[in-house]
Image 1 (tube, rainbow, N blue to C red):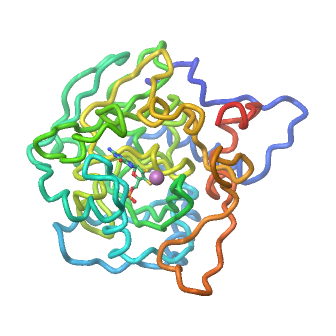
Image 2 (tube, rainbow, N blue to C red):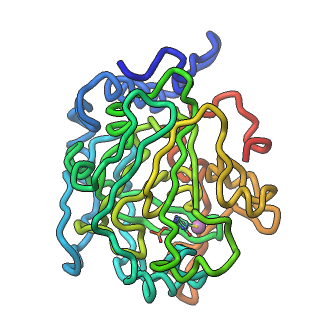
Length: 334
Ligand SMILES: Nc1nc2c(c(=O)[nH]1)N[C@H]1C(S)=C(S)[C@@H](COP(=O)(O)O)O[C@H]1N2
Ligand SMILES: [Mo]
């Protein structure tokens, strides 16, 4: 087992605690996943059957190279909600390296060169090194996951991602016992990215997770969406997707993964530390200083009579991830 005993992910409940059934079952599944071989292996058969039987399918747009994934059996990985239209998911984007307009990434990101591509793994790991994209693609079986994505700005989408649990890569690089955080550094090349001329963020765009968050099976290393490789504007060729956190935690076009002992600063925290904390878990009870986070607008439902949706705690993934934050004051650790 590469993850040492001081792995902060396993939070022992107090003796008097009643663990909700879903949390309990999910934790068992998680432990099984950690003990198993490849990411996504050894999950209960009923989970796989249910997900396949009920989840709505997303149409393949047929624009980019196909990248199919088997329907994921990770608990919570396949929402029953209707996928957002591919057109919306690929034309209404935040990718500030290509401009701050929602439509700018789709117009401008064709200048991103996604091959050759590699991801450097460094810091507190037993096996640091550079991974060619081709090798990352072969590391674990591709899965399709239908995740809600909730932007801190108050809109949301439902996107069928293709990838595998980040834990598959983490296990291979053997984190040291001193590793407590995982930082993601994204590409910052002014020749390819016109948005770098603006000073909105301190480039490169970086993000980070606590190690136990990064190990959670819902944390996805994504290479595709809608059955195809990622469009450039969605973070090609490889990105992170953390469905229970605000969208900005899901860093696009990553080039480096660094394991650290200290909590890393993040691009949005540096830009506005009172507005964007390290955790940034979706939480309808903790408002952004300038607006409420209680409701959201689902992209594609924005007709005249479209009702706002209630935002769910941890974006609806509370049963799967709530135990990661047991005992934490979520107003303080926003
Ligand atoms: N490198 C990088 N990653 C990024 C961003 C960015 O500006 N640059 N924007 C974030 C934000 S605010 C959101 S909501 C999601 C949007 O992902 P999508 O366009 O694929 O839906 O990407 C996140 N990842
Ligand atoms: Mo966002």
